[in-house]
Image (cartoon, rainbow, N blue to C red; front, side):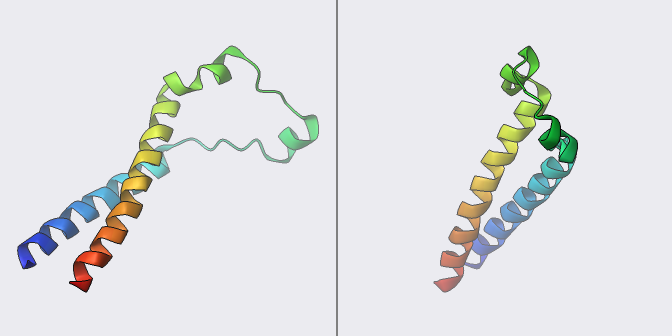
Length: 82
């Protein structure tokens, strides 16, 4: 059981580091107060196809890793209760 815990913690640490790196690499999406005042529309070709760009791929990867992070957190808590 100790070996399983050590492997799970190792994978969890790798997951945490990957999630931190992906979160810091992403560009900030907010337009600030000027975007709220001017009401800038995002109805252009780039915004419609943003999921196909590098930023879209990073965002999807971050979402998937954060889901695995939550599952891993619950899984480790159950593993340590045993």
